[in-house]
Image (tube, rainbow, N blue to C red):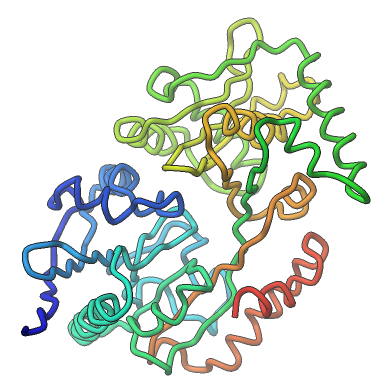
Length: 380
């Protein structure tokens, strides 16, 4: 019987593929940032259609590889030069593989295994090579999980890639049946954390807030000013207008849940989460700082309420995202290393860039015990 070879085509726009294809290829809780609702929201916000490499076997779509050729990168987390300095290439000089927002990048979307997956990877790698030649841009894949690094390197051109540590993704994996079981996980030398969490929850409950669990579509117009306050507090540039657009486009495509905190009916704090299969993603939060009463609002809204919600709805993972690593570790999160993989020709001095990347990771030692070792043992 003749072997069916993959056929790769270029498709413009995520809605050009049948929703059933997306559901089949993003059937894991870890696939949220490659899901049709998330990518459609990103398309509508940016006004640009997502570019896709689509591999078919026979009549069936067997793999999808998103890509982008950006003219400018506004998000500094996706700008290599902002992360690693002048020795890194600029984002607008690269061909970007995988999804470009969300800080976790599945890159290759396929349910295939074994020889079939290898054949799909090889076919897509050939098309990536053609794209790099056409655009004059070397390829990159950012925020890649360690177990995907070899496959991603094959897509980018094989062994001449440069692999850099870039970030840690924090997630709490839940065991047991309820929040009390979560607390029981803080045993032995970790028992003081259980005491601290109980204290933070009691303080929040006694603060006099009116708490709610609302649908994003019902409260979306209230969120932007509070999110902008948080962003400005952390030195990020953001406008209320652009933030309103982000929230509005997400509300049009995604079924978000918002934990709300009100005083006299007015919103003073919130956290927005999305569920994808068996995972809950804490996506954004906001605060009216002048009206808060200093009752551990941040931890309750972004950790404890999502954890309790996850238990009540049969969800087993709560993803807390990047940064603030120490606070997340203290609340039971595990940290997963994420990598950036740069293709051949992307870096003039790979050794120097790698040294700078590892120096950046070492600087997290005040938040993460031995972060370099964490990457070396888990991140390759």
